[in-house]
Length: 212
Image 1 (cartoon, rainbow, N blue to C red):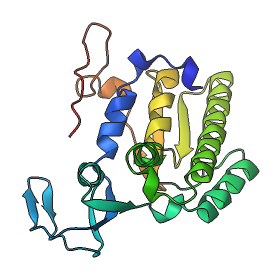
Image 2 (image 1 turned 120 degrees about the horizontal axis):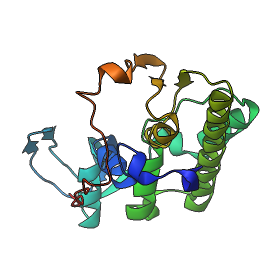
Image 3 (image 1 turned 30 degrees about the vertical axis):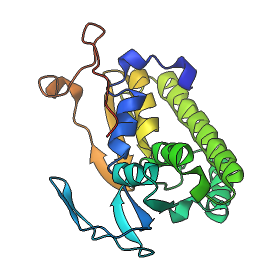
């Protein structure tokens, strides 16, 4: 599925989707004392040793790099939860299990920057990879059915950000109805959005994103 997708046709690159995922909150356990951080995006802290607090993923990574905290993996990343989700994904060829919208990016970033904070990391990584592969296969199957039926709309519930980004090149300019986390978010007809919706073109270079 991923290998068949032309990145130039997607609205967002993989790096841009990952960049947006860094605004998701995670729980950290500081090992130092520090006053609150007052930023445009919000106030975080104060930070006290061994007292858990919520911060954006990008801040958690920055503090982890400096040895100032450990990162607690989200509950959905436990082996028990991932095993249950994988079994449910395999049992249903139509429905997608509810996962964080940026589950692919969050897990990838935690694997890269906080591997020592994830218990049984090899099993967790394997389960997430299996879940991703099963879901991508189901997305591809849904798109094949969509093309064979010559339908003008596709409705898919509980897709993740990366999966939505993979769907867009196949759907093209057809009417798209994506349902995120069980809450309908209908995208209007593209003909009426052409003046507002950004279009990715080959002659507009993407600016590289700098790590926060």
